[in-house]
Amino acid sequence: MRTITTLTALALLLASPVAALADGTPSLKDKPAAVVTPDWDIAFGGGIASDYIFRGISQSNRWPSPTAYTEFRYNVRPNVQLYGAISAEGIDYPNRAAAEVDFYGGIRPTFDKLALDFGAWYYWYPGGRLFDGSGPVGPNPNCTNGFKTATPLGGGCNIYEADLSF
Image (cartoon, rainbow, N blue to C red):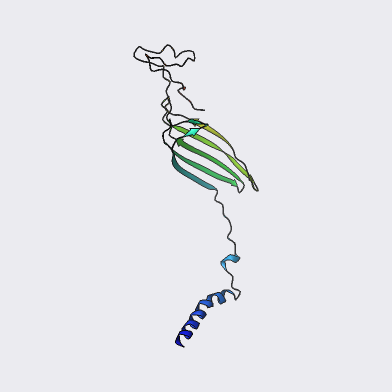
């Protein structure tokens, strides 16, 4: 008998919060929270790729390539966003550029379910050098007028310009 009384008391105790909510008091689900979009936003991140490949060509000479980016965004209106960013990637080019640094920015308008992105990019390769193919006997004569061939006497020519930025 004592067990039945204890179980009945426990059942009433557990059921009482449910009964209290059913009496018409508002719950948190009745009031939807207002969506507040901040004007400014920042995104940043980084990673490492096993090989940085662009249009089918390895930019990192088949070595791992670290990358990092930071993007600043400003919401002009809830459906129009301006953005500007910088990112850097590790590369291994023959012109010995230190890295690939990308500057980009633009505008992202949205129309219901359609989102567009209009922007511009600038690729910068700091530290790139133009080699003249100098070897033990001086400048390589094959490095003139666009001929870029290697010779047994000199280290060949750089096939890349000093400044690849575009």
